[in-house]
Length: 189
Length: 189
Image (cartoon, rainbow over all chains, first blue to last red; front, side, top):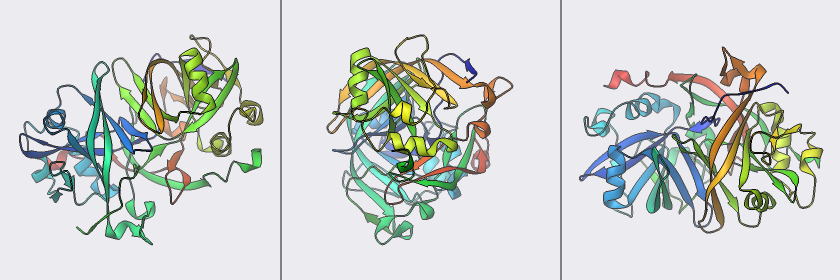
């Protein structure tokens, strides 16, 4: 077995590279978030861990709405850029030439170029220590037309980005298919 | 832009394929969980969304401890198997020939063959609807010796599994590196 203890560490593989959006003082802002994921199925909910002082979190508190945008590998530069500086210092949406659009909630800005967008309403914000865990109810899902096959989202067209934590600290696409879910494990039953 | 609305859906890409472990009535059990992720940095915390009636959740409530095990692509069959049936009906640890080990908390069973294991103590369990969101503090991280490079976890040796949600419903490895984090976006600044 041969295990080494490394102390408490946030070692989850893989992590999604998500862009979380909010209107802050009336202006759309986006930040990169790798810490989060689906939190409930019915109703559909998502979580995102955000440092307390972040500009985006200010907007989430103001409006109680936010978006989660799933970038494709083509948006790796924009995703990384949104994770490296604060919206209080730069207009990230403009710098990235994001086509910002709004949905039914009216103030949860979303990114046209991202193949998948989840429009969310805040359910709860937990103060867990260094981070606030924002839990939102997914009110609507938007998918780019060209990323659908037979009306359903097609991951081979979405081409999502994975964030790989330190020390690698890099973005990777998805690799080879290694098995079909609810199927490949049947041999063991 | 061309967006299509699909109604509220849990469309996050990619999701991790995690194996969550707990002792249930004194016996180790493991279930596959794709819904969750890191919830806080300091202290390090993780979340996992689990349906209320699940056998593993019973054990988490009993002991207030659990583990998150990161399988490699070689463990795709075992991972899928652990997601397809209940520990109330089968001894999944035996069927998968898992080398179960325990750490400092004493009753959070971990899987020797998984390259990364996070031993967790429950901080909070939120009832969000169909699922309980279990939030745990990561008390220790265990990494297989052969997955380290210079004493740090090496993702190219961990070779983690990604779960791709329906309709694809499959497992994929990580693909090509598309950029260095905190670096590739600098062009846009």
